[in-house]
Amino acid sequence: MQPIEGAVIAAAGLGSRLGLGLPKCLLEIEGRTLLSRLIDLLEPHVQRIHVVVGYREELVIEHCSRHHREVVLVRNADFRTTNTARSMAMGARGFSGKIVFLDGDLLIARPSIESFIARAATTELLVGLTKQKSEDGVCVRVASDAVDESPTILGFARDPAYSLEWANVFSGPAGILDAAQGFVFEELGRRLPLPGQVLDLSEVDTPADLDHARQFGRHLFL
Amino acid sequence: MRTAYCFDLDGTVTTREILPCIASELDIAEEVSTLTQLTMQGLISFEHSLRLRALILGHVPVGRVHEIIDEIGLDPQIVEFVHERSEVCFLITGNLDLWIGPLASRLGCRCISSKANLVNGRIRIDHVLDKGEAVHELRRSGRFERIIAIGDGANDVPMLKVADVSVAFGGIHSPTPPAVLAADYVVHSGGSLCSLLKAL
View 1 (cartoon, helix red, strand yellow):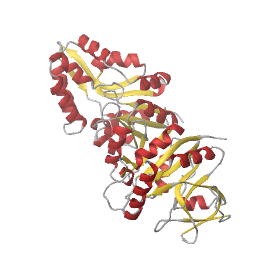
View 2 (view 1 turned 180 degrees about the vertical axis):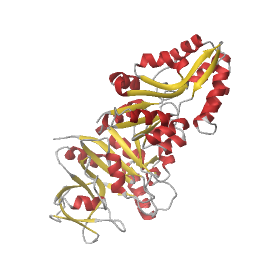
View 3 (view 1 turned 180 degrees about the horizontal axis):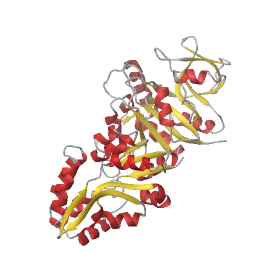
View 4 (view 1 turned 90 degrees about the horizontal axis):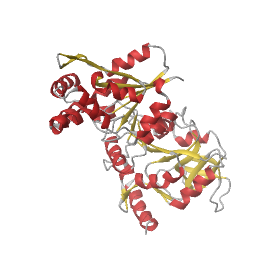
């Protein structure tokens, strides 16, 4: 049993499909940014949070200097030519134990991330899944299609026939992405089968996702 | 891996900028503070600004300067970090040895600074420190396999650039944009800075 040591939030990306000219983690849902909501969720469970910044980093740095002075900001100056796996690997430097890795554009229900973190302590590698269907999400093939909150993952595929998607959240050893060349799910795919855990969350990639996240937020924070 | 930790002094280890504090003795804290900010942002050359500020602040007796500096708060976590590993910590400061000598002694680590002497009651600056050169020198000593630098202003940029790992620190005010652009990490509290330094 090894509890989660730290969290890495990848917030360096352009968010070009949304086209707001703003890092997606700074989108506000019910009056609070996605980033602030993620930090609130994670802070009680980890020793340190690393937020990887790139696109319009000055805005994220300013936000953290005002509201989250304890987080460590990690600069990915090559954010335009590198992907999330690279950002997450950079963000994990300085950790030696088990880390939870997350995309910065997620709105997650507190009970579901807390169950995830609790189970992660007893699992070498744990992969977050979601029932939300996005336009070009990465789907997962699981051992049984029965309704199950913790299925075993057999494969990743861009095939909308499957009912669960990769949630861009996972926990594992700090160095796991150091040699990653492709996407995060591809690196995870080399280690199949893997335990999965369904999360109650909303991811913001497109304007339609943002509408969905706002509805989800109203439901969560009523 | 043997790592050297190079700390900027003003506004990084100290919780206030030192020169504006000295200037309050002459009732020109605001003016010197403005000059200090412009210098930190890189709008004025550090050397010119230091020479100008030293000329003005030279009106305050050195003994009084030591008393003023003695009252300036220090970041408690950084002080603890330095005390625990004073052999591998360095203060790298453009400030004058004449002024900050006693503070550096209290911190207990080696201090690499600009150098000045009193000549006929006036401050004569003999050497203005290039922080990048200071890091190069540490590297040439062969004692360290890795150098980590921590700073917040434009004159820290050469040091942040040549270090193996660099941290822009905003303990009392945000690190200046040039320092951020030269850094690998940005942190805003002494606690998270020291937590990161211990982990790297």
